[in-house]
Image (cartoon, rainbow, N blue to C red; front, side):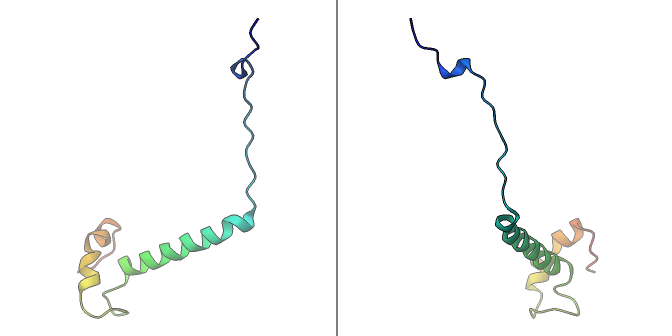
Length: 72
């Protein structure tokens, strides 16, 4: 007689706990990148421009309209 195979028993999955100290650096990095991205889409090219010229403004022009930022 053949031995029972593993498929005969149900598999129980348990969630793995991830410590907050391992997630926190990634949360901070994503939040920082989001703030920088929001700055370039929302404010760059205006009175508080960090980059001279209109290159950044033209690059993010459609994103400004998509996110309802006025630009002209």
